Length: 160
View 1 (cartoon, rainbow, N blue to C red):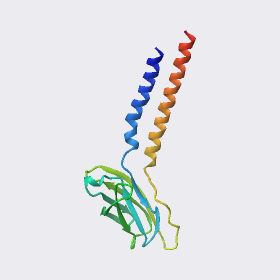
View 2 (view 1 turned 90 degrees about the horizontal axis):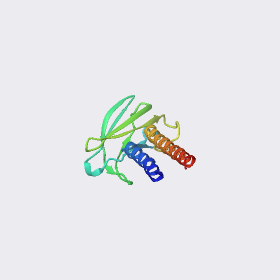
View 3 (view 1 turned 60 degrees about the vertical axis):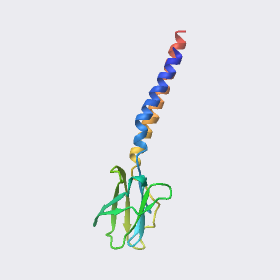
């Protein structure tokens, strides 16, 4: 009976992990640097598979609504493009990506500041909320499985 309890708890944990892990492993988009002065350059990067065709980076913000086609394969895999911000209005811009196979690759933001404004930051990933939620759910499921396992062992020990 103990083996069945352990296997059942393990199967529950693995099953929940299998259901939730794909959400955490979805494609990702980054912009680096996250803050740039007017006239600066940002690198847009997506984890889209280059074999499925070019990625389309859709940039929206205070004065933009434009598409940029990926130009190169990113060093760590995926696709990237450079965006020169000359003529951009100050503010925050959102980049959403569609991979060549039509799937979404998430979104990221960057901010255009005045020349001599805030220092350039590092690239950011704005889709962390989904990853944090998935990770928290996995931790909660593991804790629940461990609690059930301990209770079953105590119950079995009390009745032995």
